[in-house]
Image (cartoon, rainbow, N blue to C red):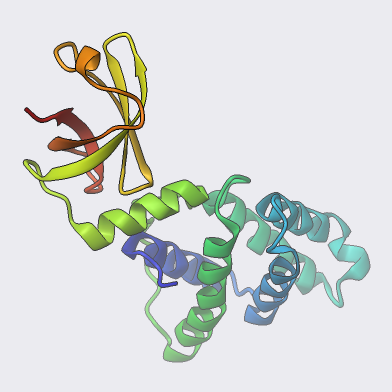
Length: 206
């Protein structure tokens, strides 16, 4: 699994922030090791974020030095900034795996830190959003594209579509709703895109 451009931005921003705060990359690797042990659990991300908070709370007791407690604080604060409890755990694992490598790079290369560029996407998405981002990046949609869409629900004149098995949209189709059936696959035209290139609006063809 490769990172999207926005996820790379986040990895660089976290690495730069932690290097600037003089955090030990080995402590990041330890946090990654913990996440790897719970990755198969449904609430892996929540467990990970709680684990970081516990480290901060108990850091003075279990830390080897006052510095270690500071490292935990920096890691917890930075992770809480970029990850939320519904963020996709395997994406976080990928990002943090790169963070510890990038930290060593920034430390050794003596990169002029200056002001850290805050990424455009500050929070890592949920698993579904991550999937959509991946599909969007690989497909490069444009307005006017014609695509297959499955009709998943019809409610009055509102029709819910599923495109490429992952993108779900509900549109008003006053002329078409009565002619369509749930479960049917129809052709839709892309009318509008969001800023990130994903589909914002479609309409049934014909």
